[in-house]
Every structure is written in C-alpha cells, then in structure tokens.
Image (cartoon, rainbow, N blue to C red; front, side, top):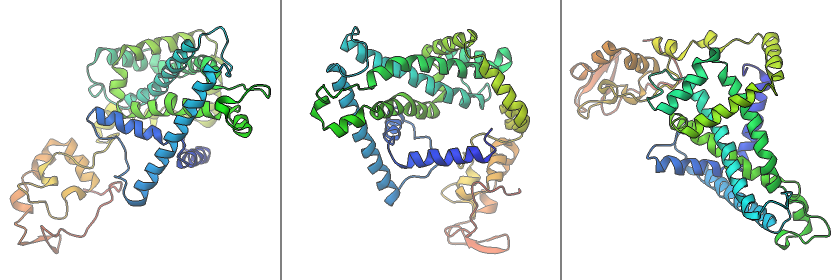
Length: 363
C-alpha cells in the first residue's frame, strides 16, 4: 500500500505540516508520560543538540501557546453561549462531554497504533495480562484476522459519532449583532468562527498525543478493560453493516493493485524471528564481546559492530558464547598495539572503520 509515489508525496506533505510546529506540544506530553513511567522516549532519532534542540523547544513553546489560547477562547465562548452546542445542555455538562468524548476519540486513535504494533509481536512478546490477551485473541485469532480491519471500520463510525458533539462545543457561532468572545477584534473573531482552534485542540489532545503514547507503550495500552470494551463496541458497529460498502471498495482496490497480505512478503512475526529478521533491531545487545569486558573493548568493534554480527549473536547462542571467549584473543591492554585484519590499531584508539547501523555486512 505504501510502495508508490502517492504515499511518498503524502508523507512529504505530512512532514511539512509537522515541521511548522503547530502540534509539537504533543511530543512534550509524550516525554512527560515516558518520564513518569521511568522509561526513555521511544525514538529512532538521536538526542537533539545545538540548533535542532533550540528549534524543537521553540516550536513546542509555540504549540503550547496556541493550544492554551485555543482552549481559553473555546471555554469562554461555551460559557458565554456563543458556540453551536444545544442550549438545553448545561454548560458544565458540555465541558464534561467535550473532554470525555475527546478522550474516547483519543483512545480509539491510540488503539489503532497499539493494535498494529502488537501485530508485529510474537505471542510470547505480548505478555500475560488477561485484558491484553483477550484483545489480541479477538483481533488476530478470530474471523481469520478480519477483526482488525473490522475494528478500523467500527472505530471510524465511533469517532464520527463522538465528533458530532465535540465539534458543537469547539465551533463558535458569533453573529455581527453579538459581542465578540472576550472582546477580541472582529478580524480575529471571524477567523475563530472558521473553527481552526477546535481542530488544533482535537488534533493535539484527541489524536496525536494518544498515538504517541500508544506507540511508546502498546502492551500497556491493551492491558486495560477500556480498550477491550471499546474494541467490542467498534466491532458491534461494524457488524451492523452500515459501512459494509468499505469492504467492497477495498476488495476492488486490492484486486486492481495486486495487493497481498504483509505475511506474503515478509512472513509472520514468528517466521521473521526464526530467520533472525527482527522488527526492532537493537544497536546494543548484552554481549560482553561486543560491548567490552573488564574495561577493555574489542578492537574495531565495541558498539560499532556490524549489524549482521550483532543480530546473529543475539539470535544464535553459540555465536554469542564464542564472542564472549574473545577476551584473551581479541583484546589487549590499551598500551599494546593489536594486529587486526592486517592493520595495526590500539585498543584505546580502535580502527577507524565505521559501520553504518542500517548497512548489512556479511559475517
């Protein structure tokens, strides 16, 4: 599905929007949640420094100011009776519905990320939480795996239903005869009437933040009864057949494009593990011969060992055991030069050979 230029152009467009920094505060929330959980933030990027670090936090501050301003004018408009929310609904209940339903939408957004992340894991990696196991059983073992796309259909129906009310709270409707919200200028009020502030609130607090957290903690996201209940509701909505036309259109698209399941191309999670093709390759593995022993690093290797060797050692106990016996063979005191592959290099000053983490090297 992503092996085409249209997907590439779509990706570039999304990255351009992300570059503007409008929703960068979502990253800050992710960092805070990861810190509270005592875990490092999941990212394939290295630590930010210099101008990249400064630019990131400027964008995060910019996003925070926009979010705070959007929430302020939205709540003020609600209590002034200048939104499209029904007059019969008390203002306090409108606030409860707004944040409650936005949380439901956020859960649904995060669930789809967590479900696809769990699909790449083996059954052993999914843990033993009863709610997570029940959810995985419904998604991947029943209806020949069709419950996962079925959830996507029901999820969309549930999200649209929630947004009927969320959008009414977030949309302002100030006419020329009414006083502007918080006394802001007419030009600003005309802009707010378009609803961009509501879109920003729901994007950060009702979508992206939940997706980032779900990507960081997919197993924990499934280990709650809320996820299981929402999954059942979504499958019920899909089972009503309201959007069954989506199955027909998807089948036509797949037939024309010649799509096949990912398992045809890359195999199941168990098959990939058996071949040593891990979904999330680790740059560092707990093998002394690759990370150093007794304070002495293996010449030319250390953390720069070829990716193929690191993955082989991580999957083959015999290879790992052999590497761990190299202390007296491949390392020497830092004051002594070491002959390695026809070149001379000291332990303290390892060979200048650098390996690209993404480059496959024959072992």
